[in-house]
Amino acid sequence: MTDKAAEPLPDAVHHLTYRACRENITRLVTSGPSVADLSVPACPGWSVRDLVGHLVQVCRMAVGEEPGEISEPPPPPPGIPLAELLVTWAELEEELPRVLSRADWLRRRILPLDVFSHELDLRAALGIPPPDRHPALPDALDLAVTGFTMSLSGHGLPALRVHTPDRVWTAGEGEPAVTLRGESPDIFRALTGRRTLRQIGEMSWSTSPAPWLPAFTWGPFTPPTHPVEEAAPAGPAGPPLP
Image (cartoon, rainbow, N blue to C red):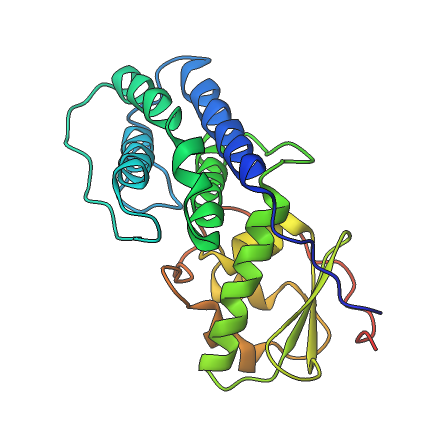
């Protein structure tokens, strides 16, 4: 089977996927009784208000920084009402088309990945599944596989084939020595620090995953020591792809 991966999305689409996530998060935190103080298991120590505050800080930094500059945002000031954070976020997001049009490829893609990842964190905390076809998922997953490829190289590990119902990647250099199969959301969560090593090991692998598990710690992502959300059950492994 020929490996395939979509080209990175055009600039305008990155902004639209970011906006879709912001609007989804806004609906989720305002459509019922107040959830501001609920904990978010995927982000230890954070409440829903903290999660939204983080996203506001990231957006503020993206609007204010020079193109290509990426740094860790400071924690948001405590005590800001959730409604105020949402208004500020919407105002800042109006500036993103200008910012993304002059940013490098990583900035254009990492902002939607971050907000999409946290939308999934929020949904897991509220027990609300993501939509079947989330517009942010394809590019976010593609970027996550790119980062994981660098992790495999850094760990000196053989290449790994990532196989979802829609797409196939070769992560790493050379002929893949193992195939990891799964639904796109589950693969994305495994690659971005939301699955324990045990959960990752219980996914559908063509051979023992043990040598590749250290590579799931990369960049800002570290697998949690205890499950933060349920993983989809693994399907049959099947034979390794040619």
